[in-house]
Image (cartoon, rainbow, N blue to C red):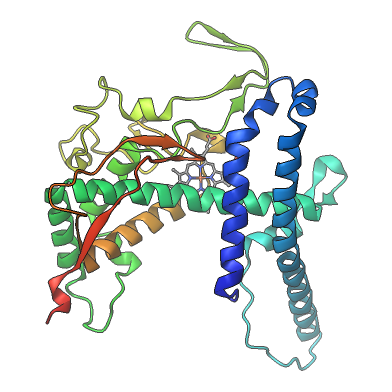
Length: 338
Ligand code: HEM
């Protein structure tokens, strides 16, 4: 909140450059790394330079936070000792960086994280929490442009629920979102049809195991066909069609929860499953519902030009993005005209 626009822009550039470079150039180092790290040493050099830029941007912020935290802790100790402490205006809200500063690694003698490790974790956290959500949002809005009937039905639901809000209150409240089942269905359908990740992060088994006749060797990389699961014709009717109604009463997705599970069966898994499932699931759904509700409440989303079709072709980046990014014509909804 306190960073100026330019500093945020710099972080955005550093994050995006790092992410795109690593995804398209460093995967090869996973194969025989002892050899490939020499053959592709220039790629490693570029990635190291991109990481150095992140360090340059993040370390001052991490140190400033550490200092602020120390000051707050001192104030608290003095207050506990009965001293008069001048209240400063800034509240202390426990943040992700605070959790990194507090962390101790029991397996390594309780040592703290190094700055280098904190930079890497901040970078992963920022990418995990932004690229995924913005990709999902773009796919959902693209489908709303393509399916005007769905958009109309959604706009009606939003208006109906938000109608009771005070005139000057522009924002849709979090509790309003709970009363919008069709909005939830639109978001779930977006995640089913276009999961931002077509795979989860690679997993491995700690011991050799057998699953339905397949031997999984110890430490072999295991992954899941996330996108295929959501598009499986044996589970979903007309799986390639965007039909939020399927998540409503009587549909083939009725009862499917945010994690993609219905009565103990995993029908889709855009957030992964099990212990390493996405920890940001709740926040992501809240963001998506909140953004979609506001975007649809404020504007009518129309094709960019008469007869222009929305192209649903995919392109792999860090997530699977729209090959041709969404172009749309936005018309303010009439409630503003009054
Ligand atoms: C639509 C939005 C999102 C989708 C589709 C998504 C999806 C995923 C998936 C598929 C995984 C891998 C799970 C696995 O390997 O089994 C994952 C991991 C992760 N996600 Fe998300 N995610 C989203 C939003 C977020 C947000 C908002 C945050 C943080 C604020 C976040 C933080 C993380 C982190 C830290 C991990 C790694 C967890 C671990 O390795 O234990 N994600 N996410």
